[in-house]
Length: 172
Picture 1: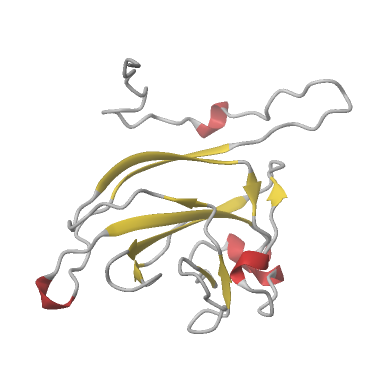
Picture 2: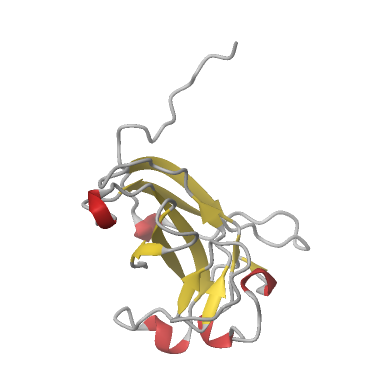
């Protein structure tokens, strides 16, 4: 069998100094730089219970979006919803839906799940203002990260409540 090696982030939340960040090293002049965004999903606290005092079976979805214009205002509402159920057509409260780039494991029956799970992003969805409401969630294309400003959409869902039903809001 293989020996289990502890993950370097287990048990500790790393400190990230954004002033020390620089663009990734480039190769030969003809090669493009490779950008990545690393997100560590730690936990959620006090999620609402389902009807009948049933505990949620929570999972999260995460996606990156290119930022420009009105979305640079952190108080602006984010006009996109993650589509997690098969066959969703982009109709409902939100005009625009996308298939999540990342999805966490399910934390069964608990209101304060601890995932301690890492996500790595290499590409980004377009600015939500440029998403066509005519596209189905699985038709929205992504582009490689290139150092532009991005927003992280993180949504929490209850896998047992309903297919794709979000239980809590998103964040940046």
